[in-house]
Image (cartoon, rainbow, N blue to C red; front, side):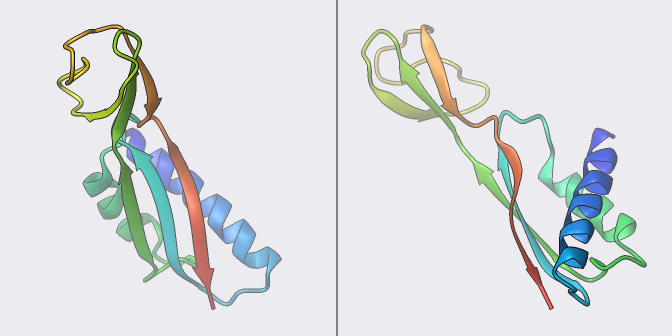
Length: 113
């Protein structure tokens, strides 16, 4: 349910930015969402379609790029991509890992008219 408040904040930010540049409407919003961010992209799209009605972003395309979970193993010093449910080094099996990426959540870019 927190996706709705996230979408409302994204709409607020993007509309403010669009108005700064005298844009008539927002055509596309690109988001970067890490697999460990706790956000569910499919739900965000549904909420966006509802919450954007009557705004500068109504009808805009919401593109969500998922950022995989990348780790660096503190044991073998290798970097790997892992799944959310398998939080260990896939090469040596160590749980002594450092997460390098996968927690991101930000607006990457905006296309306006």
